Amino acid sequence: MEEEMMTAWLTGLIVAFVATIIVEPLLRDWFKRIKVQQLVIRDNEHGPQHAFKAGTPTMGGAGFIAVVAVAYTVLMFVFGFHFQSAGGWATLLAIVIYAIVGGFDDSVKIFNHRDEGLRFIPKLTAQIVAAILAVVILAAGRFEFIVHLPFGLPDIHSVVLYSIFTIIWLVGWSNATNLTDGLDGLATGTAVIAYVAYLVIALQQGNQPIVLLNAVMVGALVGFFAFNHYPATIFMGDTGSLALGAGLAMNALVLHVEWSLILIGLVFFVDTLTVIIQVTSYHYRKKRIFLMAPIHHAFEKGGITMNPDKPWNEWQVDAFFWGVGLVATLIYFLVFN
Image 1 (cartoon, rainbow, N blue to C red):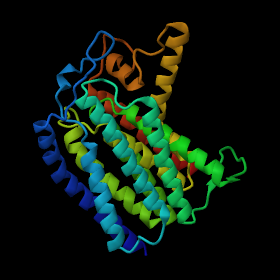
Image 2 (tube, helix red, strand yellow):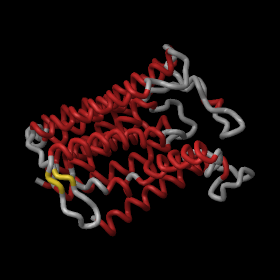
Image 3 (cartoon, rainbow, N blue to C red):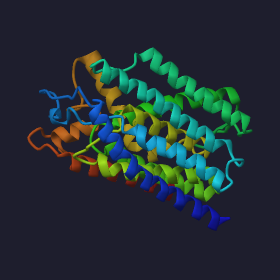
Protein backbone atom coordinates (compact mmCIF):
# COMPACT_ATOMS: atom_id res chain seq x y z
CA MET A 1 0.00 0.00 0.00
CA GLU A 2 2.77 2.47 0.89
CA GLU A 3 4.66 1.61 -2.29
CA GLU A 4 1.50 2.15 -4.35
CA MET A 5 0.89 5.51 -2.67
CA MET A 6 4.45 6.65 -3.31
CA THR A 7 4.22 5.60 -6.97
CA ALA A 8 0.94 7.47 -7.32
CA TRP A 9 2.06 10.78 -5.83
CA LEU A 10 5.43 10.77 -7.62
CA THR A 11 3.65 10.06 -10.90
CA GLY A 12 1.16 12.84 -10.22
CA LEU A 13 3.86 15.33 -9.36
CA ILE A 14 5.95 14.58 -12.46
CA VAL A 15 3.01 14.43 -14.86
CA ALA A 16 1.61 17.75 -13.60
CA PHE A 17 5.01 19.43 -13.72
CA VAL A 18 5.73 18.35 -17.30
CA ALA A 19 2.20 19.17 -18.47
CA THR A 20 2.36 22.66 -16.95
CA ILE A 21 5.76 23.35 -18.49
CA ILE A 22 4.20 22.55 -21.86
CA VAL A 23 0.80 24.22 -21.37
CA GLU A 24 1.75 27.55 -19.79
CA PRO A 25 3.98 28.92 -22.61
CA LEU A 26 1.29 28.03 -25.14
CA LEU A 27 -1.35 29.74 -23.00
CA ARG A 28 0.88 32.76 -22.44
CA ASP A 29 1.52 33.26 -26.14
CA TRP A 30 -2.17 32.85 -26.97
CA PHE A 31 -3.17 35.34 -24.26
CA LYS A 32 -0.67 37.82 -25.72
CA ARG A 33 -2.34 37.55 -29.12
CA ILE A 34 -5.87 38.05 -27.78
CA LYS A 35 -4.82 40.74 -25.28
CA VAL A 36 -5.58 38.84 -22.07
CA GLN A 37 -3.16 40.96 -20.12
CA GLN A 38 -2.70 43.01 -17.00
CA LEU A 39 -4.04 46.47 -17.74
CA VAL A 40 -4.17 48.40 -14.48
CA ILE A 41 -0.95 48.42 -12.51
CA ARG A 42 -0.37 50.50 -9.39
CA ASP A 43 2.25 53.17 -10.12
CA ASN A 44 1.92 56.19 -7.85
CA GLU A 45 3.41 57.99 -4.91
CA HIS A 46 1.85 55.60 -2.41
CA GLY A 47 3.40 52.37 -3.63
CA PRO A 48 6.19 50.54 -5.45
CA GLN A 49 6.48 51.20 -9.16
CA HIS A 50 4.86 48.37 -11.11
CA ALA A 51 3.81 50.17 -14.28
CA PHE A 52 6.37 48.25 -16.33
CA LYS A 53 4.34 45.07 -15.73
CA ALA A 54 1.37 46.38 -17.69
CA GLY A 55 0.73 44.16 -20.69
CA THR A 56 1.94 40.98 -18.99
CA PRO A 57 -0.46 38.11 -19.78
CA THR A 58 -2.65 37.12 -16.86
CA MET A 59 -5.12 34.30 -16.02
CA GLY A 60 -2.23 31.83 -16.04
CA GLY A 61 -4.08 29.99 -13.30
CA ALA A 62 -6.39 28.63 -16.01
CA GLY A 63 -3.47 26.60 -17.33
CA PHE A 64 -2.19 24.95 -14.17
CA ILE A 65 -5.68 24.44 -12.69
CA ALA A 66 -6.75 22.68 -15.90
CA VAL A 67 -3.66 20.48 -15.63
CA VAL A 68 -4.52 19.66 -12.01
CA ALA A 69 -8.13 18.79 -12.85
CA VAL A 70 -7.30 16.56 -15.82
CA ALA A 71 -4.23 14.87 -14.32
CA TYR A 72 -5.95 14.19 -10.99
CA THR A 73 -9.10 12.76 -12.58
CA VAL A 74 -7.16 10.46 -14.91
CA LEU A 75 -4.73 9.27 -12.23
CA MET A 76 -7.50 8.66 -9.70
CA PHE A 77 -8.94 6.06 -12.08
CA VAL A 78 -5.53 4.73 -13.13
CA PHE A 79 -4.59 3.98 -9.53
CA GLY A 80 -8.10 2.96 -8.47
CA PHE A 81 -8.55 5.64 -5.81
CA HIS A 82 -11.81 7.03 -7.23
CA PHE A 83 -14.10 5.08 -4.89
CA GLN A 84 -12.12 5.67 -1.71
CA SER A 85 -13.04 9.17 -0.62
CA ALA A 86 -15.39 12.02 -1.37
CA GLY A 87 -12.82 14.37 0.13
CA GLY A 88 -10.61 14.37 -2.95
CA TRP A 89 -13.48 15.04 -5.35
CA ALA A 90 -14.96 17.73 -3.11
CA THR A 91 -11.58 19.45 -2.89
CA LEU A 92 -11.08 19.28 -6.65
CA LEU A 93 -14.59 20.65 -7.21
CA ALA A 94 -13.88 23.61 -4.91
CA ILE A 95 -10.61 24.31 -6.70
CA VAL A 96 -12.23 24.23 -10.15
CA ILE A 97 -15.30 26.29 -9.25
CA TYR A 98 -13.25 28.94 -7.46
CA ALA A 99 -11.00 29.05 -10.52
CA ILE A 100 -14.08 29.68 -12.66
CA VAL A 101 -15.24 32.46 -10.32
CA GLY A 102 -11.75 33.95 -10.50
CA GLY A 103 -11.81 33.61 -14.28
CA PHE A 104 -15.01 35.65 -14.50
CA ASP A 105 -13.48 38.20 -12.15
CA ASP A 106 -10.35 38.47 -14.30
CA SER A 107 -12.40 38.69 -17.49
CA VAL A 108 -14.44 41.62 -16.21
CA LYS A 109 -11.26 43.51 -15.33
CA ILE A 110 -9.57 42.77 -18.63
CA PHE A 111 -12.35 43.26 -21.14
CA ASN A 112 -14.09 46.13 -19.34
CA HIS A 113 -10.76 47.90 -18.75
CA ARG A 114 -11.39 48.50 -15.06
CA ASP A 115 -9.61 47.83 -11.78
CA GLU A 116 -12.55 46.05 -10.14
CA GLY A 117 -13.84 42.71 -11.34
CA LEU A 118 -17.12 41.13 -10.33
CA ARG A 119 -19.27 43.13 -7.93
CA PHE A 120 -19.06 42.12 -4.28
CA ILE A 121 -22.47 40.41 -3.98
CA PRO A 122 -22.29 38.27 -7.17
CA LYS A 123 -18.73 37.23 -6.35
CA LEU A 124 -19.55 36.35 -2.75
CA THR A 125 -22.68 34.47 -3.84
CA ALA A 126 -20.67 32.38 -6.31
CA GLN A 127 -18.10 31.55 -3.63
CA ILE A 128 -20.81 30.52 -1.18
CA VAL A 129 -22.51 28.31 -3.78
CA ALA A 130 -19.17 26.63 -4.49
CA ALA A 131 -18.69 25.92 -0.78
CA ILE A 132 -22.21 24.46 -0.52
CA LEU A 133 -21.55 22.15 -3.48
CA ALA A 134 -18.38 20.91 -1.76
CA VAL A 135 -20.41 20.14 1.38
CA VAL A 136 -23.00 18.26 -0.71
CA ILE A 137 -20.30 16.02 -2.21
CA LEU A 138 -18.85 15.36 1.24
CA ALA A 139 -22.31 14.45 2.53
CA ALA A 140 -22.86 12.09 -0.40
CA GLY A 141 -19.58 10.39 0.49
CA ARG A 142 -20.62 9.94 4.13
CA PHE A 143 -17.98 12.34 5.35
CA GLU A 144 -17.71 12.75 9.11
CA PHE A 145 -18.92 16.28 9.82
CA ILE A 146 -16.93 17.33 12.86
CA VAL A 147 -15.82 20.84 13.71
CA HIS A 148 -12.59 20.47 15.67
CA LEU A 149 -12.18 23.36 18.08
CA PRO A 150 -8.76 24.54 19.32
CA PHE A 151 -7.45 24.81 22.89
CA GLY A 152 -8.84 21.46 23.96
CA LEU A 153 -12.47 22.48 23.53
CA PRO A 154 -14.91 19.65 22.73
CA ASP A 155 -15.54 18.85 19.08
CA ILE A 156 -18.88 19.80 17.55
CA HIS A 157 -20.76 17.12 15.57
CA SER A 158 -23.15 19.08 13.40
CA VAL A 159 -23.75 19.12 9.66
CA VAL A 160 -25.28 22.60 9.89
CA LEU A 161 -22.40 24.12 11.86
CA TYR A 162 -19.86 22.32 9.68
CA SER A 163 -21.52 23.68 6.55
CA ILE A 164 -21.43 27.22 7.93
CA PHE A 165 -17.82 26.77 8.97
CA THR A 166 -16.93 25.42 5.51
CA ILE A 167 -18.47 28.44 3.79
CA ILE A 168 -16.61 30.89 6.03
CA TRP A 169 -13.37 28.91 5.71
CA LEU A 170 -13.48 28.64 1.92
CA VAL A 171 -14.48 32.23 1.26
CA GLY A 172 -11.98 33.57 3.79
CA TRP A 173 -8.94 31.61 2.69
CA SER A 174 -9.59 31.93 -1.04
CA ASN A 175 -9.64 35.69 -0.67
CA ALA A 176 -6.60 35.63 1.62
CA THR A 177 -4.59 33.83 -1.03
CA ASN A 178 -5.89 36.29 -3.60
CA LEU A 179 -4.54 39.21 -1.54
CA THR A 180 -1.11 37.58 -1.35
CA ASP A 181 -0.84 37.36 -5.13
CA GLY A 182 0.66 40.83 -5.43
CA LEU A 183 4.28 40.12 -6.37
CA ASP A 184 5.83 37.86 -8.98
CA GLY A 185 6.06 34.34 -7.58
CA LEU A 186 5.00 35.24 -4.04
CA ALA A 187 1.69 33.37 -3.92
CA THR A 188 3.07 30.53 -6.06
CA GLY A 189 6.05 29.84 -3.80
CA THR A 190 4.04 30.20 -0.61
CA ALA A 191 1.37 27.85 -1.95
CA VAL A 192 3.99 25.23 -2.85
CA ILE A 193 5.15 25.16 0.78
CA ALA A 194 1.56 24.88 2.05
CA TYR A 195 0.54 22.13 -0.38
CA VAL A 196 3.68 20.13 0.42
CA ALA A 197 2.71 20.39 4.09
CA TYR A 198 -0.75 18.96 3.42
CA LEU A 199 0.78 16.29 1.21
CA VAL A 200 2.82 15.19 4.22
CA ILE A 201 -0.21 15.27 6.52
CA ALA A 202 -2.25 13.24 4.04
CA LEU A 203 0.60 10.72 3.80
CA GLN A 204 0.63 10.42 7.58
CA GLN A 205 -3.12 9.74 7.54
CA GLY A 206 -2.93 7.35 4.59
CA ASN A 207 -5.44 9.45 2.65
CA GLN A 208 -4.50 8.42 -0.89
CA PRO A 209 -6.85 10.71 -2.86
CA ILE A 210 -5.64 13.82 -1.01
CA VAL A 211 -2.01 12.73 -1.28
CA LEU A 212 -2.44 12.45 -5.04
CA LEU A 213 -4.27 15.75 -5.37
CA ASN A 214 -1.62 17.65 -3.43
CA ALA A 215 1.18 16.01 -5.38
CA VAL A 216 -0.46 17.02 -8.65
CA MET A 217 -0.93 20.57 -7.35
CA VAL A 218 2.70 20.84 -6.21
CA GLY A 219 3.95 19.61 -9.58
CA ALA A 220 1.73 22.10 -11.43
CA LEU A 221 2.77 25.01 -9.19
CA VAL A 222 6.48 24.27 -9.55
CA GLY A 223 5.97 24.16 -13.32
CA PHE A 224 4.09 27.45 -13.23
CA PHE A 225 6.79 29.05 -11.10
CA ALA A 226 9.19 28.71 -14.02
CA PHE A 227 7.17 31.44 -15.76
CA ASN A 228 5.80 33.33 -12.74
CA HIS A 229 8.99 34.14 -10.80
CA TYR A 230 10.36 37.67 -11.06
CA PRO A 231 10.25 39.03 -13.71
CA ALA A 232 7.04 37.13 -14.44
CA THR A 233 6.06 36.44 -18.04
CA ILE A 234 2.55 35.45 -16.93
CA PHE A 235 0.45 36.11 -13.83
CA MET A 236 -1.92 33.56 -12.28
CA GLY A 237 -4.71 36.12 -11.81
CA ASP A 238 -7.73 35.59 -9.59
CA THR A 239 -8.28 32.42 -11.62
CA GLY A 240 -5.33 30.83 -9.89
CA SER A 241 -5.20 32.58 -6.53
CA LEU A 242 -8.84 31.98 -5.52
CA ALA A 243 -8.51 28.32 -6.52
CA LEU A 244 -5.31 27.84 -4.51
CA GLY A 245 -6.91 29.26 -1.37
CA ALA A 246 -9.99 27.09 -1.79
CA GLY A 247 -7.82 24.00 -2.18
CA LEU A 248 -5.87 24.76 0.98
CA ALA A 249 -9.05 25.41 2.96
CA MET A 250 -10.53 22.10 1.78
CA ASN A 251 -7.32 20.26 2.63
CA ALA A 252 -7.52 21.48 6.20
CA LEU A 253 -11.18 20.47 6.40
CA VAL A 254 -11.10 17.01 4.85
CA LEU A 255 -7.96 16.05 6.77
CA HIS A 256 -9.61 17.30 10.01
CA VAL A 257 -6.71 19.62 10.80
CA GLU A 258 -8.66 22.83 10.29
CA TRP A 259 -6.59 25.12 12.51
CA SER A 260 -3.31 23.96 10.99
CA LEU A 261 -3.94 26.47 8.22
CA ILE A 262 -3.32 29.36 10.61
CA LEU A 263 0.36 28.35 10.72
CA ILE A 264 0.75 26.60 7.38
CA GLY A 265 -1.00 29.53 5.69
CA LEU A 266 0.48 32.17 8.00
CA VAL A 267 1.63 34.42 5.15
CA PHE A 268 -1.88 34.50 3.68
CA PHE A 269 -3.35 35.09 7.13
CA VAL A 270 -1.01 37.96 8.00
CA ASP A 271 -1.46 39.63 4.62
CA THR A 272 -5.21 39.62 5.13
CA LEU A 273 -4.95 40.79 8.73
CA THR A 274 -2.80 43.76 7.74
CA VAL A 275 -5.37 44.82 5.14
CA ILE A 276 -8.12 44.69 7.76
CA ILE A 277 -6.02 46.70 10.23
CA GLN A 278 -5.01 49.26 7.61
CA VAL A 279 -8.53 49.80 6.29
CA THR A 280 -10.02 50.02 9.78
CA SER A 281 -7.40 52.47 11.00
CA TYR A 282 -7.70 54.73 7.99
CA HIS A 283 -11.49 54.63 8.10
CA TYR A 284 -11.77 55.62 11.76
CA ARG A 285 -8.53 57.51 12.42
CA LYS A 286 -7.43 58.66 8.95
CA LYS A 287 -4.03 57.14 9.72
CA ARG A 288 -2.13 54.29 8.09
CA ILE A 289 -0.48 51.72 10.35
CA PHE A 290 1.74 50.24 7.63
CA LEU A 291 3.57 51.83 4.71
CA MET A 292 1.24 49.79 2.54
CA ALA A 293 -1.13 46.88 2.84
CA PRO A 294 -1.02 43.96 2.27
CA ILE A 295 2.16 43.88 4.31
CA HIS A 296 4.31 42.40 1.52
CA HIS A 297 4.04 45.75 -0.29
CA ALA A 298 5.23 47.53 2.86
CA PHE A 299 8.35 45.36 2.78
CA GLU A 300 8.76 46.12 -0.91
CA LYS A 301 8.52 49.84 -0.15
CA GLY A 302 10.70 49.94 2.97
CA GLY A 303 12.33 46.57 3.66
CA ILE A 304 12.29 44.95 7.07
CA THR A 305 13.12 48.31 8.72
CA MET A 306 10.11 49.94 7.01
CA ASN A 307 12.43 52.71 5.84
CA PRO A 308 11.28 54.15 2.48
CA ASP A 309 14.93 54.96 1.73
CA LYS A 310 15.79 51.26 1.86
CA PRO A 311 13.25 49.46 -0.34
CA TRP A 312 13.50 45.77 -1.15
CA ASN A 313 13.32 44.24 -4.60
CA GLU A 314 10.76 41.54 -5.31
CA TRP A 315 13.21 38.67 -4.87
CA GLN A 316 14.05 39.91 -1.37
CA VAL A 317 10.40 40.22 -0.39
CA ASP A 318 9.55 36.83 -1.87
CA ALA A 319 12.44 35.10 -0.11
CA PHE A 320 11.53 36.67 3.22
CA PHE A 321 7.87 35.63 3.04
CA TRP A 322 8.67 32.16 1.73
CA GLY A 323 10.99 31.85 4.71
CA VAL A 324 8.23 32.94 7.08
CA GLY A 325 5.87 30.40 5.52
CA LEU A 326 8.43 27.62 5.78
CA VAL A 327 9.33 28.37 9.41
CA ALA A 328 5.66 28.58 10.43
CA THR A 329 4.99 25.25 8.71
CA LEU A 330 7.92 23.60 10.47
CA ILE A 331 6.65 24.94 13.80
CA TYR A 332 3.28 23.31 13.11
CA PHE A 333 4.90 19.93 12.47
CA LEU A 334 7.26 20.19 15.44
CA VAL A 335 4.72 21.44 17.98
CA PHE A 336 1.19 20.50 16.90
CA ASN A 337 1.41 17.53 14.53
